[in-house]
Image 1 (cartoon, one colour):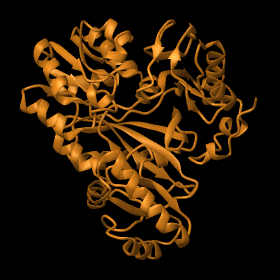
Image 2 (image 1 turned 90 degrees about the horizontal axis):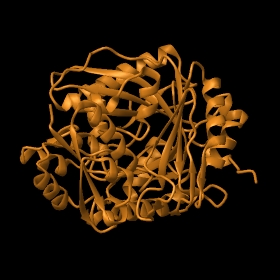
Image 3 (image 1 turned 30 degrees about the vertical axis):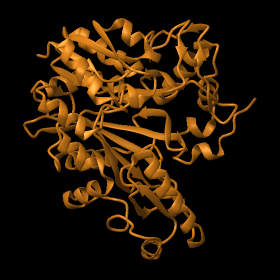
Length: 446
């Protein structure tokens, strides 16, 4: 059993980890930037250490400062949450070299899945379906043109070290390729300090469906069913649900087995997610692996009554996973509540929350770190909370979500609550008729 865990993150996910640690009898250490001194994760942790100025590079990405906080508090483990250093192989290695357990996979596992080209090659060897595409990184524009002709348009350019849509461009015909190629390389270099890009066939009308997995150090891997994350804007997820309205029992079994193969190919240890693109004919293709807990993990928790953070900590302590695959018994939907203005192209809206009323009632869960009087800083991701509803059927979960959103009051800033209210009444969404392009045609009503 760990005695004390330092949480190398902020906000909602830090508070989420603190809650599970408290239930397990484990002491916690919060780290925070000067901009986050009034955040709830700082107030609720057993100890808190300031690690730098507001900019992430000076605080939540500052490995020396975080390791100094580990040392002065005598923490024996680090939970990285999601984002920041959660998939940083060097940080995981530094922790383990200093006798501090990194609650997640090893640096080697992170490296194998963090580089998209290496991950794709690993999946091919493991027999996991991948999106058709060129082999390796593109070396030049002429190389890109040759690959595109071989694959067939449309194609998509992706940053090998990428994520969140950075360094990603869809190319419909050759006349667009040069500009897309140059832009993708510049964007990848700026975002990841690595301008390597590769090419794949662009899957039209895709669903984004991911499978939650858990693996232990003894080689056992199980899956915990799927989440549908197709409602997204600029490759950023807005709504997630489980089970997917697009899923069949046959497809669920096939994707679950493929996800276990994918994780098993690297001897994966911890919880993680295998992400797939699924075309309109229900052919599925490996996209990437997230070697961390995800924002939308609560959806899975609600449909199978399972604490994924606790499982992650127990695996890190050397305990075995059950080995059983889990299937959803309920239906859960998560709406990300962002400090953004949906009537103004989702422009960020930091500032002080003057009034807050959080919804409740049967089947409602809210994960958030904000409160009335809290000032949302402009330096970090705009997500300030997650609203999750769970019910026996999808329609009931949607109805509960609409009711809960109607009760959710956040004043002083703009939020995505009005968008979610309109989405819950959208006929295509309610019927399950959507894919990753849904938001391109969605128009907010005044």
